[in-house]
Image (cartoon, rainbow over all chains, first blue to last red):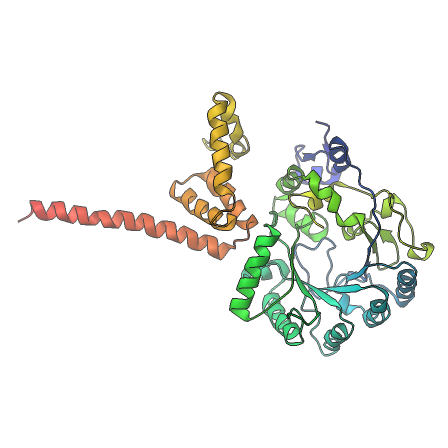
Length: 330
Length: 110
């Protein structure tokens, strides 16, 4: 088997030579697969890395001390790009997007431009006198809320996301439910995202969703629409934790050994383009975290006149094993 | 330190088929069928397996099914309760034999 080191720095940190996996691009080739774009249907906008939380699984190492933030000039360029590109969905993420002062403009200008607009929320960044109005704004523009909620076990959730986050999240979910989010017939979508609270792969999405529906309803009277179960990507703060806890080697090997060729067809990078806070384009949010530009070329959003062409190559690296492990990450 | 139990043996489990491949194949087919979702969910089966692993005190099984339980969505509180179920049954099994002890002693005693 043709193997290579994941990266020289990890080899030295681990102090051993056994951290090897086959490069992702070779694994694709071995299965006769190529990773190219289909029609790009989703524009993902990362408005910056400022966050009120410091989650241990964050692939960006986002937190209160980060200064990366999308400025109004870039916001206007993103809006202009969306106006000329006709995306099916627009996905706003961060950091905590609620902390970006331009979020209101983004939502107001972008929501008429795509049938579906969604905001990734950590559920605690809504709180605070200056931000509670954001929930009304989301409702007014029918923005789907995609909320991080890793576990209904308080100690597991707080150990990943910080002390007190679980109770605050429950309280925000109740508020969203009271506004109509996650309720049948309201057309206000509330989805949950559950990441494993450690160095292990996620459980089956369908089974987890059923169980979360039962437990959240039974214990807190909370309802939601869909649950997405995502594996943690070994980048940023999560990679640091893997290193410090001695789990990096086994985790990477597990991701690589769980490669599912059938997951490649549905990978999100085939239909999504991600724009960073400073306006550069990437094939996905994880490549953004890794600094891998879209198709391997540094292109600013102001240089683009429409979505990337179908058939364009997608930049890959070994963290891509996260999205092809088991059922995949779509 | 040299030990009888080596963690890397767990990943080599399938090598047990080298001398008796037909039997190993039957065992692993059965094993995989047992853990597939049926009337019990995969998560419930993993919790049972974790409990049995503690009963038979197999470090390979404890390692494998701790991971399986987490991956199937169980949390540490549930897994800890499962180990207490083991303890209750094992303790109860000892204690209930005390009735035999009492019966023998009563027969022998004045």
